[in-house]
Image (cartoon, rainbow, N blue to C red):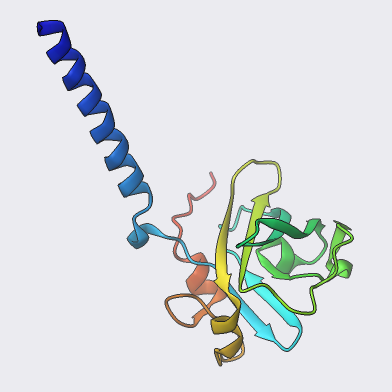
Length: 163
């Protein structure tokens, strides 16, 4: 009987810990936002980066079907290396997939970057209709929390100064 009670308490503790972990990791207050600009057929994203981060790879998925739409690696431009990327612009990268920009974009684009020399990265899912309808000023990007500049997007993350 005592062993059954101890086992029951252990299971309850494990379930409680899992629920707490899942809840705290999905807390929207700690979400890091990326930005997007849709100007006609040109789609530019700004991923948050620290000064020491360099983008290595960009991937774009249809968020609803999880289908890979485009992949690029080795940004050639200083902006691309710092997280400002024009999607489907093959000239800005050393290597790209053969995927062409869809004539009709999916409802939600899932864009992620991986930093060069690391498995770390960041990403965001963008509501294409809302982003396309947003009128953001030059130098700003649409986010779920309103228009932000590249500097404001980068300021969300705490960067460690290099020694």
